[in-house]
Length: 190
Ligand code: VGL
Ligand code: ZN
Image (cartoon, rainbow, N blue to C red; front, side, top):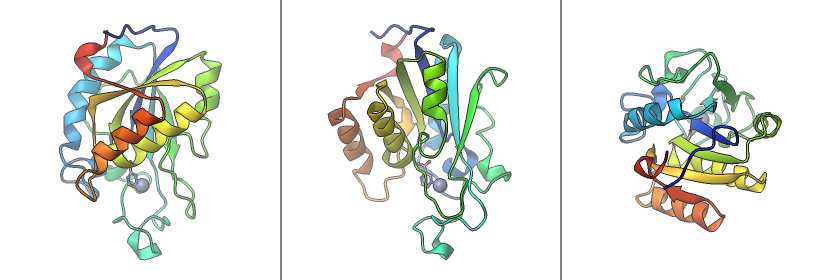
């Protein structure tokens, strides 16, 4: 069992946006399935941080610009909006937008944002990481969090992967574990 310490633990919700859910521009298989798990976790936390992929229309990661992805999460579009069923306390939860510069990719919530600073200011020591996608933004966020000195628990049933190649999510989980993250499930927490 893992007991949440509301003073020192933060819930981190990565990119639970329409474009990463079934029907979206860069759909993650079963991406929507993370939503009820996150909704179950969120009320137990005092500190909640959520990231949104937030790209200009001509972002470097898009195919037309030589990137590998279809256009997705274009700023202020429905695709960039959070999944409509995601229930966070939006009065208190902290939003972090990433990938906002046309010529810079940013998979990690820590990349070119003030996330680390804000977590430290709030005296957070440990992150429970959830969201999309396991093999891209979740992985990068977890690895950067560890590098920044935070403890990390990855909530396995609250993440899903793109799986550009089958096995990418398992490999990503392995990499996160080797870097020092602990993998847990919703039922182990509280
Ligand atoms: C992501 C691909 C492109 C993600 C973002 O949130 O994992 N993946 N942009
Ligand atoms: Zn993106």
